[in-house]
Image 1: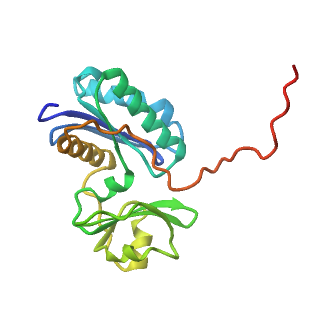
Image 2 (image 1 turned 135 degrees about the vertical axis):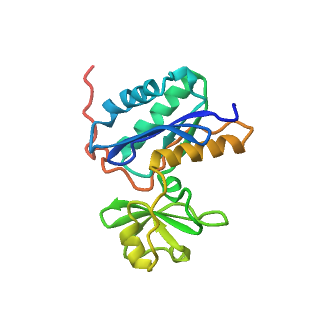
Image 3 (image 1 turned 180 degrees about the vertical axis):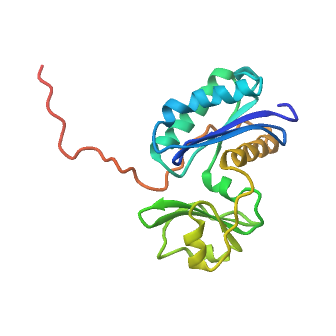
Length: 220
């Protein structure tokens, strides 16, 4: 791995299609297009446009990074599948980065990352000097005790959460995809072994459930 690897990070776990191209500490390109649907059709063209705009191609990449959630089930699967496919075809590492890690990136610790999970819920993770508690899906009316250890709250669910625990809101210094690219670079630099393939982070059961009725018998 080069000392200034070229990393392409992307995320479709929320109502957007976001991506960033990072070489070393320098952001070559970044996009964040709001969309409730259509990420599957938009992601690869967006990535190709970003590479072309920087005068680069797929074979110039040293690694890819994918947002692994928590968030929209379909969006999370899209990012993870795209990263795995690109890594396999290009022969480069794929790094998974959670949206909670990205929300807390570059902020003074301890910081509570809070993402809107809808239905009165919030995805939470506390990042401090020690190992962070695992990410959880919490009810806004019953936040875990460790949430109150934070000195600030960040993320798209920060406003409501900060009001409940009476902490200030910390605004993320860089866009989510840029944060993911930096975090992936840190993971790559910190390890000399193979990095596990990105895997979806699901904190809530899927909305869709298998049918309760038994399948019809097949006549032979």
